[in-house]
Figure 1 (cartoon, rainbow, N blue to C red):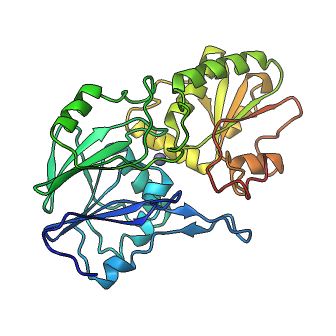
Figure 2: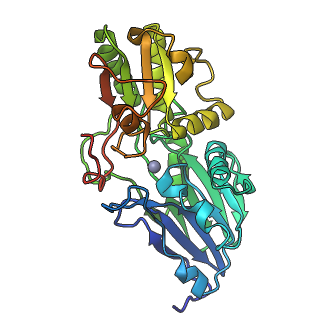
Figure 3: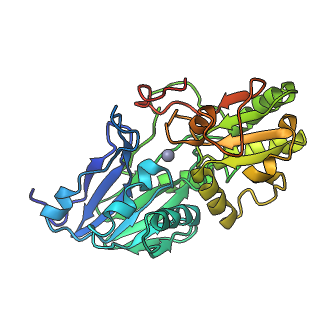
Length: 344
Ligand SMILES: [Zn+2]
């Protein structure tokens, strides 16, 4: 492929027109930047653990030296491939905000790799990466610190969204700053590269504060037996909702599943969820009445190896599911997961 040096070019290597493995390249005046490097979960009937990664042959075959990798947010479909492709890409400088950096470093450690050096981006500071001027803008989504990236060049400006919705009351993090958004658009945006699951759904996606009300109602009605909630581990606002409603009703919460524990550590490291005193360990939960207990567990997509499935198959040595227990699925099905979702 012939690249003319002064052209501003966008090349999607994954995630455009498909769900998962987001990977986007931008070129200007000999500089190359990548935004996001995620995975896609396989739909294989053989294994639930199959990971599909973007094909980076274009970079390797053209001997492209990237000036940086910017990560919009910490979902697997945006950062999941980083530990696997980081060496192959020549340990490129990485840029993101603090929560995403913390989640990514835990991924490096869980893959027995040294944590990488990550440059932290600041909402109020513009930086240069190669020949691009970079600004970030906070959006709302189902994970803390989802950021749009604004790429500025003499040839034009690009607003790359990452995943987003407009939640007027996100509960964790700030709502979208509309006046700053107006200022950005006044600078002139030549293209918006917009990426979001369910983007073609015309109905409003709702706010986390509405979800909290529904939880209050359901939790109050459950007088006998445990409440078991499964949700995406990375949905810190949802974790906060469950902890908060449990606290209001004097219930104690137990995290079940490795990824919830990992996200909780990253959340605490970044000052989210810090004020809750109603969290107990699986072992401690054995001493507490079922009527006072809320389990928050992984497995909202029916994954075979996740905590909920293990509970149902009586494979958890500390906790059993009983007939009075209420199980709540607090997540949408990721498009494409329908076949392997055997619990619903
Ligand atoms: Zn996302």
